[in-house]
Structures are given as structure tokens and as C-alpha cells.
Length: 551
Ligand code: N01
Image 1 (tube, helix red, strand yellow):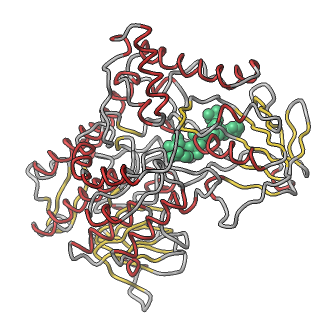
Image 2 (spheres, protein in one colour):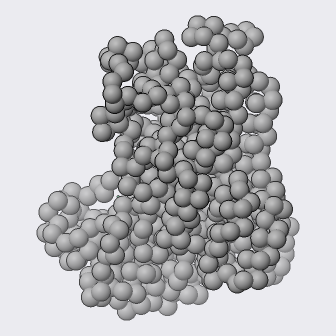
Image 3 (cartoon, rainbow, N blue to C red):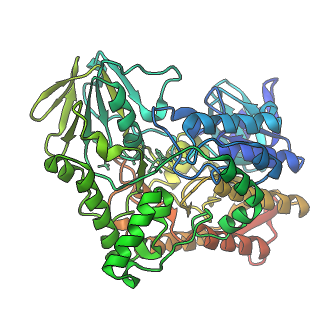
């Protein structure tokens, strides 16, 4: 690797910034707002030709957020939350994208966001304590601070099936959906994958296509979303009490204004539990998920909830063989992220829908006209892949990042991602991660706001104390790693392969990527870290002089 300071000479195409932001999804947008507020020179670089991140790319039919729209929105501006009008309980992709675009316009952030630009490489210049950043357009940016916000679910899993090139029909990935509508009318369609994306899109495609074949590998637990329009009265009530609602969310474990009704399913008699579960099932969505506190830690509680959901599948699906194929077994409810659907199970009662279990009939290869499984040849006009993402680390490692002494992040994370607080990596000074590995489960925009605010707090601390470098300590990372692992082992999450472990991507190291201690706990740890003057970091006033005691 060439030394960054040698190769990166100033040219007409060189720009200098206080803060460079990678990505203009909800994290990046807010980072631009905050940095500007602090008087930093800032620019966000976004590879897409529009802002919105996840909501720019995931335009598939049926794409909808499963956090209520009134909570899946920024808290930083009361004017914004008072002005914006959400039309549905769970907003669809188009409305959320329109919201992201509105925020950018309303706060005039667009002039500091550069679209259609991929950040390809970051090199830390040890001597000048700054990052040298390259784009795919041949630009060079010199930045004191870098904030990575490229998305935690933004790199699609590549379809691993042989022969895809031979297929002469159309194929699409849910997470790279074209802007022009895909016409399913009269078409023979396949959907491969039954995670949250597949489960949302299958009912919509089934209602348009001539025939739909769903290829399922693992049946999923799903809860009816029961989406509906919001009434004027609901909107008025929320707006009158937004501040209180947000305060509650900030103090909660999930980052949402919800508290479980019961500590444990074991506290309820059979008929009481049935009544409670049914009443929340009727409301749908997160209300069902957040009913019993210990469902992620107590296998007995979990089993009772799982059985309730399994029974619901049998009640809805007419054909008992299909119902059994759709029934999740052998792993606990919530160990994979539960899905939220609109008419998912009922879709399998339609005459034009067929379910194929790829464990019994594995996909062998694609052909000119469709695909071949171990026992049949199927013809399709359109194939939709809903295969998931290289979560948490995929988008970060897509950038060739070299820290102190040229250390490569790809090599440093070869056995799994390591961070301190999910915010910083040892050997990579002045670099912040916003929604990467090592943070609590992300339930939306307040998580991004917290991550950005905390990073900005450290930048402000550096400014006030004339620090040129802040860098996580390796011992702090070790401790954080242990915390993540121990917290995961107390839950049901390790009992199934999932993207929380990197287990959905061949060759990815198996390491738990999320802190399962709640947003409230995380905030308290992060607050103490700042209060104790960032003792998990080495702080330097010049490239060689650490100012922290003991360094
Ligand atoms: O991806 P997934 P997703 N052959 O990884 C299957 C968020 N999200 O995009 O389970 C056959 O969950 C795979 O099977 P298996 C949300 O956090 C939110 O659906 O690995 N099948 C699985 O069925 C969510 O959790 C919203 O056995 C293969 C599917 O593909 C996350 O994004 C909406 C296969 C992938 O499911 C990811 O969801 C959408 C193969 N080779 C997404 N490889 C909302 O807010 C994979 N699969 C509502």
C-alpha cells in the first residue's frame, strides 16, 4: 500500500473538510444537519442518485416499515414533527422516501450532500491526523473526521444459484428494485426467500401475477401488521403529546414508546395468556411483539407464544400440508427477526400460488426459461430474489479502509467485527460508525440521532481540548466484545442461524453483531463514557502525545 501522505497531494480536485459522511440515509442526513449546526465543514457522499438509503433502494411492491410512522421519524425538530403528516399507521416505502427528501429540502441540506458518488477508499494519514478519502469519480477529500453511515442492511446477498446468466426473463432483487414499476400482470413469477422482504412482497405480487411460486427455505414467524390509515384525531393526539412520547421512547429498551404488559408468560394462566395474546394479535404489529418481556430470554415463555402463532397459521391456511410447510419449528420465536405482514398466510389459499420447500426440492440451477430443482423444471417470466443482506459489516467493508500504519479494516475484522460501543475501532482514529456492528438492535431514526449526537459530542470535546486524535483502546474493544457475547448468550438468538451472526452469508465470520442490552442501557453506558472523559479512548493533542492518564 502506498503511503497516503505521499500519494495524496493537493490538486484542483481536492477538497478539505472537517467531517466527511459516508451515506445519505437517515443517519447521514442527520449527521449533515448536526455538523452544520456545530459549524463544521461537512459533506455527505451517497452512491445512489437520491437520498434515503434503505428507502431509496427497497422499492419492492409491499415495502413498508414495521415501526409505526409516528415513531419512525426524527425527534430533533419539533417543527418538523408537527408539520409532517403521516397518512398510515405503518408508512409505505414511497412515503418514507418522501419524508427523507422533505427533511433534506426543509433544512437545506442538499448543498452538502453529493449524490451518485461512491467512497472507494479511506487512508489515515498518521502524520497529519486526517483521513484521505477517494471516490469513484477520481476526487480526493481530506477530512479530519469521518462518519460511516452506509447502512446496516444495504448490501444485498448475491443470488448464489448457478446459471442465472442463462435466464432470459426478468429478475430483480427486492433491495435493488427498479424505479419503474415491474408489470406482473399475466406473468409467471417466482419469489425466492421468505424473510421480512419476501413476506411483504409475496401477497402483493400474488394479487397481480398469473401464477406465483414461492421458494421457501425456512418458514418464518410473522405477525399481522394490520396497517390502516391514521385518522385526523390520532394525528392530533400524537402531535399534542409528541414530546412525552419521545421521552418515553428514549428511556425504553427498544427505542420505541412501548413497555411490555407482562414480565413473563409464566405469570399467566393458560386462558389468560390466550386472551392477552389474542387481544394484541388483533391490534397487530409491534403491540404483539412487545407484550411479554421475557420472550427473548425464557424458553418456556417463548414456546407458549410460538405455539400461539403456529396455531394462527393452521387457522388461516386451508390446506393442512401447506400450513405445515409454512409453520416455523425448531427455533424460538424472535430468534430470527419476526416479520410483520399483510395477508401473508392467506395468500397461500389463492389458486395461483404454490409453495416449494427448497429443503425437499433444492434449486439446482437456473435455465433459459426458469429454474431446475432436484425434482422438476419450472418456467418463469420474472424471478424475484428476497435473499437478505450482508448485514452490519457489508457496506463498511465494501470501502477499502486503512487506518493507523496502513492497517486494513478488512484484515482487522477477518475473524469478525470488533468495535468499542459500536462507535469506534482501535487503530482507526477519528472514524465513527453510526449503524454498524456492536450497537443495540436498531428500531429507527432515534438510534441514528443518538449515534450521531454521541460522535458529535466527542468531536466537540476534541475541539475544546485541542485534541487531534481520538481512538478506541484495544482493551475497551475486548471488554465490549465480551459484553456483546455474554448478552447474546442470555437470549434465544444463538439458537438459530441468522444475519445477527453473519450466518446468512457464506464465508462470513460467525460473531454476534448486536448488543442485546437495550437502547436505554446503551445510552447510559455511552453517557458515562462521555462523562468520564472518554476513558475507553486514547486522546492525543498531537500525533504522538496522548493526554489520557496512563497512556
Ligand atoms: O432478508 P432475510 P430480508 N436459497 O435475511 C432466504 C429488515 N427489513 O431482506 O432463513 C433459498 O430476513 C432465507 O432463508 P433462511 C428486517 O430487519 C425490514 O427479508 O436463511 N433461500 C430467508 O428466507 C429484516 O430482518 C422490513 O433459510 C435463501 C430470506 O432468503 C431484514 O431487513 C422489511 C437462500 C432472506 O431473509 C432482512 O430481511 C424488509 C438460498 N440460497 C426488511 N439464501 C420492514 O420494516 C437466503 N434465502 C418491514
